[in-house]
Each structure stands twice: as C-alpha cells, then as structure tokens.
Image (cartoon, rainbow over all chains, first blue to last red; front, side):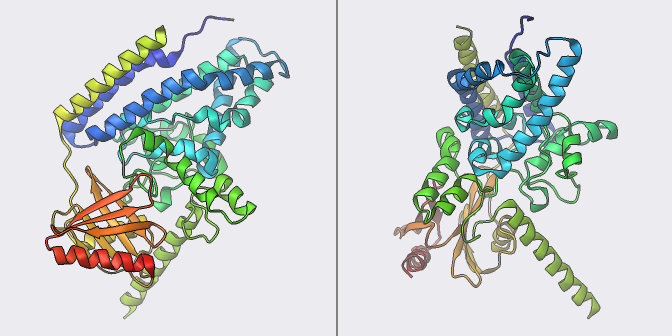
Length: 308
Length: 139
C-alpha cells in the first residue's frame, strides 16, 4: 500500500490564497460579494467541520474496517483502479448528495452548506459539524468498500472530489468552454444548485462530473434572464455558528414533539424538507408546482390583456 | 500534533481573512426603499404571495406586510446586505410589544430569528401593529 497524505491538508494554503484573490477581485470589479460576518460564519463552520471530522471520523473508519472483510474483490492499487475509484466515488457522491436534499434527516446536516445568502469561496468551506452522526456513510460509503476498493484509496479520491468542488463556489467565473461545461461541474452549474429560485431548486447535484445530472434528469442550466438567489427557502436570521449548525435539527425535534401520529413522526424525520401533514410549508416539488401555476396564471392574464 | 498546528493555523487564517474582508469593504447594508419592494421580495420567497397592505419602517430595515385573504402577516428584515422574510401566523408568533419610542419588538418561535426589532417613526404606529399581531395570536 502506498503512503498517502491527506490532500485536503495540502490544499488548505491554496484555499486561503484563492479566497484572498477572490476578495480582492470582488472589491475591484463588484462581480462577487463578500461580507465579513457571513465570511466569518462560513470559515468557522469549515474549521468546526475539520475538528468534528477528527473527533467523529472514527465512526465511519470503524465501520469501513469492519466491512472490509466482506469485500467481494481485492482490487488492489493498479492505476486503472484509481480511475474507476474516482469515477465510482463521484457517482455515489451524486446519489448521496441527492438524498441529502430530499430526505430531511440528511438535509438537517447538509443545509448548513446552503445557509449563506452569499456565494463565494468561503461558502465552499461552510460545512456541517455532525455529518458522521447521520450515519450517511453506511448507506452511501459502504458500496465501494464492499466492491473491494482499498479504504485509503476511497478516502483519497473523496478528498480530491471535495477539493475539486472548492473552486466552483464563485461568481467570478461566468461560463467555461462548452465541452468543459458539458462534462464537468462548473461554477455556473453549481450556482444553480445553490439557488432558491423555484426553477433551480433541487438541481445539479454533481460533484465533479455533471453528466450524472444529465443522465438522471436533474440538470438545469443557468439562465442569464434569471439570476440566482442564493441561500435556503427560509433564510437564517443569525451568524451564530452553533445556531447555523443545529437549526434544522432543532426544527425536527420541535416537529416530532408536536406530531400527532407515527406517520407524522416518520414524515417529519424522513420526508423531503418542507414536508408537513397539511402541506402548508412546501417541499421543493410543491414550491415548483405553485411557481408554475403562478407563471401560467400571469401568462394567461397577459394574453387576455393583449387581446383586449 | 499535526491537528493542533492545523487548528491554530486555521484560526489565524480565519481571523486574517475576516480582517481583510473588513478592510477591503465593498458591501453596503440593505435597505427596504418601498412597500412594493418588500412585497416583490415576499412574492419571490413565497410564490403567489398577495399583499393587502403594510408598512416599511422609517429606517428601511424592516417591513410588515398583510397577506390578502389569510389575516396573517409577513415580515421582511434586512440583515447585512441581504434580506430575510418570514410568514407570521399564530403558530409562529410568541409576542409583540411596542415601546414608547416607536420600537416594535416581535418575538418569534424561530430558532434562528427569535426576535425582530422594527423602528417606526411614530409610537402610535408601533402600538397599532403590536395590537394587530397580538390579536392575530389570540384570535
């Protein structure tokens, strides 16, 4: 087994340098937005994520070490295994990320990353603190270990995937050459993912390769006539990292405490974010439906006015 | 040991980056210029939101908007250079209290927005909205 370093540790100085460059670019051109309190919150969330990873990472590692003995194959360290590992990890990232947006249990963790109304490189570092406790690694991390990829190789490829995703959190890059935009996740595609415009909700889950979204029907291109509004459907009224970290979990606890049946308990925990028994809050699907109805209503009113 | 160095370095880097952001400037606090602007934002956040009236605070930092047909209210607040919006029905409201200085304090059952402060130009207006909110909660 080769000696592998943690690529994220190597990348940190580059992250810092790129944030500085983007801040200066934002000031000079006005084409990106930063605000100190928001930046501070995002960066502290990033640091907390590193700490929690060190403290809670043993949960995933212990599970994978346990699982390793049941692996179907021993794929080893050949060069082609690295490539297959990276692509497979990205494929599983797509599904893991999709479930992080459509199951409230996982969303309660992932929402942290979407909770800034800014979209800059510090937003990339705004990460949750409690991810291992959601046990998402069991559902989405086990497959590769069971296939026989070495655990260290999986960890390395996952880290590369996360490093790739850092630079796409920017408004400074508009569009890249078409072949690149077709194959890879780009700032343009990922801006759509972070937007709350009904048209853009729950789109572009990709990590590195945007082709997964194209294949599974979740791709949406950024439109010049519809600028992205960043954040979440119910934007936060705080910069407090603890509140940012816990707000959706608190929401789940409050909802479950007020639930009137087991069905409601299950719905509040595992249904899509925004689910409520009477439909009064609005999931992404409901928001999109209302938006389409409102669009059709406005168009028919315009048509009627034009005819008169 | 490596982790300690990483943490210490990260804390330093964070402080430096936030200081740089502050030093460079380039952002300005958001301001609600008109009721139409507040309603447009509510329509963007809550598709199909229809207003039947409302008020913008004297300092442009907040607005209260009546939602047509429901008897509920909606709150628009500025936060830094961004806006946040909330629909307020009886379940979301804890209490509303108007001070003699025209300041209306709204307490919400909201983990990330427990309290909203709206500054009106007249104490009577703050009082009127406080009564409207408390009546909604009781009714």
